[in-house]
Amino acid sequence: MPPSRRAILSLYQSTLRTSKSFSSYNFRNYFIRRAKGTFRAIQAESDPARVQSLYSEAVQELTVLRRSAIVNQLYGGWRLAVEDQKPERFRSDN
Amino acid sequence: MLSRISRAASRGPSSKVSHTVTGYRSRRGIVQPSGADRASVVDLPSTYKDESHFTPRADMLGFKLGMPQREESLKEKVRPIYLDMQATTPVDPRVLDAMLPYLTDQYGNPHSRTHAYGWEAEQAVEDARKHVADLIAADPKEIIFTSGATETNNMAIKGVARFHKEKKKHVITTQTEHKCVLDSCRKLGEEGFDITYLPVQTNGVISLEELEAAIRPDTSLVSIMTVNNETGVIQPIKEIGALLRKHRGIYFHTDAAQAVGKIPVDVNEMNVDIMSISGHKLYGPKGVGVAYVRRRPRVRLEPILNGGGQERGLRSGTLPTALAVGIGEAARIAKKEMAVSTVSSFVLDDDYARSPFHASCYPSDLPFIQLSSGNDFRAGRDRAHVDALSKRLIEGINANVEHVVRNGDVAGYPGCINLSFSYVEGESLLMALKDIALSSGSACTSASLEPSYVLRALGAAEDMAHSSLRFGLGRFTTEAEVDFVIQQIVRTVHRLREMSPLWEMVQEGIDINSIDWSQSHN
Ligand SMILES: Cc1ncc(COP(=O)(O)O)c(C=O)c1O
Image 1 (spheres, rainbow over the protein chains, first blue to last red):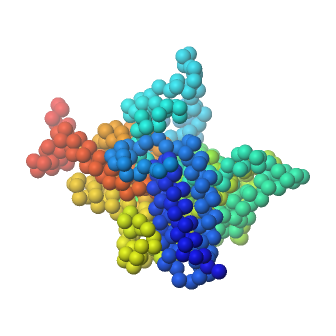
Image 2: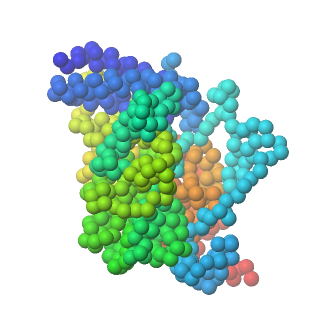
């Protein structure tokens, strides 16, 4: 049974929210970019079996991402010179 | 030539050497020996209290080492952006997540056979070995964990040469290798081996004809790096491997520290016998590396570390479980990020995927990134990202600054761009760019004011080698950072050139090279 559209969307939102909670500028931006890419690939996939496997992979990755984000919030997050340029652009919402 | 020898000879106590060394010295002077006489013991200053005892050294180019305390407000300190991915890469948070269990509760010794602590650690290490093997298409049994590419290079070069020293006395390498390869070869030279340092062409690539001509019946080892750490030049490893296969009994070692995880590497396709990999160049931890040592046909080498016989007896010592897991996970992620998915799955433009299910952003017209090499190799997302950034950086700088030369082959690895800015001194440029962590070459040579031996081997003029900067792009570099760099570089180069009398003369149309400088001094 391939995951429902709703389930995929909800997983995407959680992944994106977790990615945005990284304190370090580079990691935050990478995981946001990666989440978008991963879910566009799922969206573009027509084979239900492939969708299922991509979906379970993404579920797995979200658990890793959640733990990594917590560690990163503890130790990361000095501001980079490039962030000062556009201070309002990459604020996380936590 | 004479003055060169005497300068080299007056350098230190190690000049009291046999005639083979003198022969080597007169041929090349590119490595300094790293003997014990060069190590120095520094006493702690009497004022030592805590880690704030650091004082800026002269070679820190005027930067201050302000050790930020975590308790301070994080917002106050602004850190430079990091563009030195050839020196080291940040540890991927997913790699750290895989390592942490082995730094906390699962602390067993992977060689303990009598209890669960040992078994679980061993399982983790073997999984990691498999991930590394998969990345380079090897067998897990051929993977040896070491402390880094430096150790692997030492082990490979000294190990193979010494094992075969009864019959074979000749080793071939190139002039643009990493210091640890050159210094290992220099050491072998002191032991009586003959070393050939192949020159490179002006694009940094070796010539296969010259390599073939250098092969002798008593050649035991050829060591040529896959991707150069200063210029990003990619050597034709596959062709070299095929060439060396035709000669029986020559082992082929390649230092792939800068290549693995970045360009596709297949040890069988390349006919490589020994390969060096470093964890901290592929988003893994520092202090761990891998030696790939082929089993069929078997590569015989003399181990440097003797002891408990771990790692097929080639590298004794308890394996650092967490570090091995780290390089394994880094390799697994690298392989995944290098895989080509059916859809091009990277996003350049934020608006593309504000919502992935929005009808207007369906991926039908994704931007296609042309590789600098122009071949039809389809890139995974890591590579596509680096390609796009590299193109953006080069075009951005080209559009705004003139007299910029790219050092090395344009078909090299795009994540390593070495540019020379004429009429600007590299060190002044670095100093002015305090918001960007860049280097003018490899980490070990950038502190000295000597121009890079790699660039000199490419035939770069002294002044161009002095004005070079290396831009290292990677997985975590953002477009905004590249734009920031372009803006800063353009501003700084223009400012420095305005202060330069040479630049003024160039603007007036005087050919600098035609001026006889010595005359104006007398
Ligand atoms: C090509 C090359 N070989 C070897 C090394 C050394 O690697 P490690 O730091 O793992 O010893 C480096 C990095 O400095 C490198 O770029």
